[in-house]
Image (spheres, helix red, strand yellow):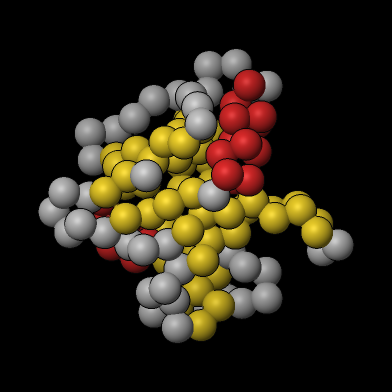
Length: 115
């Protein structure tokens, strides 16, 4: 788990997410972490962006679990404080999902939200 020292807001990842991230990174040469960021846009106002990256930036907060690392920049953390990153494999398919207590509405695709 990682915490932002300025706000004390945490973002967590589940065991399923950690396992999937580790699996993906093991197949991607040079990539060391999954970056999750919040961008303007999407059908609900904000959207999550997922990228495999090679290193950290100075403003990144790192969430580490079982060898998996998720990086979130300070600005995105403002919108994601208290969120849980999960990986779901069900009849609808496989996807990373973010349960964000700051979101007051989200879309059916699960990648867009409003606050």
